[in-house]
Length: 68
Ligand SMILES: [Zn+2]
Image (cartoon, rainbow, N blue to C red; front, side, top):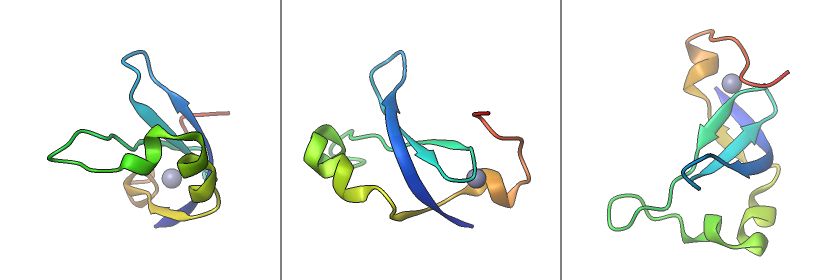
């Protein structure tokens, strides 16, 4: 299910995590050469993704929300 991004934070390992409108969190790692998301490493890049949709597998699986 596509869910819009409403914010970002970093986890304890400093990986970026997208906060989705559904209440789920999803890692948006930048780990070249396997996963290349250079936009996630800059403020402007992250702000530019706000409101864009990410496929939320947790919604598809009916998992409880990660955030209140
Ligand atoms: Zn979700």
